[in-house]
Length: 523
Image 1: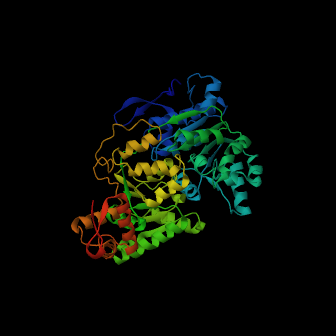
Image 2: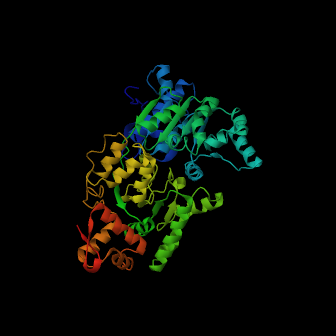
Image 3: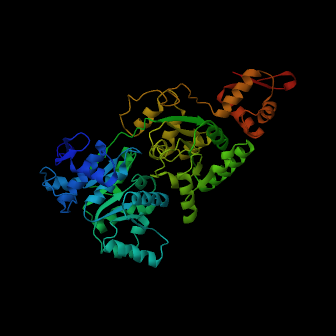
């Protein structure tokens, strides 16, 4: 292996289609036989061969389908061991799952994959079963009988794949049983959660390093779709205990996603109008569980009043639902071409619904990494899709409340309000990534298409109103008329707030009229 490239063992095989011989390496043959795929992407090949070389260095047999000679070039044992500790950053839809599924089928021993959320665990179990695996799931709430069946399958070789979350791996009962099982490869999927969740509401993520120390696997791979330098530092600290690890970084750009932002005061109203204008299936991400429920009810009522039949295809999803409710919603959403799912981050990560056309963020996510992860749910089939981020005065108040330049919301708010720079390039630069500078500008983003605006959507309506009615109405009178308008459905109080906001911004000005009746006009 030189400079991260793989020199394969060559197998000569007959091509029945044209009667000629062609060269096929064992990885290509394995992925064809086991997964029905005709090729591997370069990054997939690099990650997988690193894992296999490290497995060979650890003395783990590689289960090729035919007898082979030396598969890999001579490499120092210490170098091969280093390849067994990897941080892999590949964009959503780049095939990260195959990077550990194929080695799991080839390497003797058990693969343990740690996922952050139950919906992702269920989705991965479904996908693994389709590809011929017999995975077991370790999670809270399982009965004694369920657990005994899991340990039986693992010990007698019926299963070589464990799906779990970090909390369950920290329990004494599970660790006692895991002592009897040899884990060859531990995978941490969505590894950025270590940084985003570990230091707040998921302290178990800070203990992943101790889980690895207990299991002592020869192979450890941490996967994520996006990671800035501070997030990578946290992954290295909490997962790999600060030791040197191999890093593979792919371009996080998703060229088929068109990015845009929209300023607003009434976010639910903005979501309603965006869903009317854009394609489905769609996900609307909200910051809270109650928010998802309120938004789903609001949208159903609004679209029913508008006479749109698909109002029935709107549901909500969050971590507070029962297992049965989550499973039902996951199945409904996966097979529904008209679905709109209002969800917290509990649904988004890693769930493989390929045909999502629109992702809307009602609320500003906690970081650039989270935004790219969640917006990356769109267009996994490669078709053109949209990602829209809403922002408003409450985000600015949150930034002021934090009183810090490195507030996680500050970067995204600045991104949302910047109408000079390409959205795609801005997101990549926030991750310290220089790639993507030559992406096509067609359908790239609202800035490139010259449709971006710094005005809140309600401000646009107010400004248009006063362009047509200069010096005709007071602030109070204008608020009443705007509230009665069918262009934007809002309250008199909301309209008055926007007028006052524009006066403070000096986009509007107050003109003293006859008998102290002040009128509003455009400045």
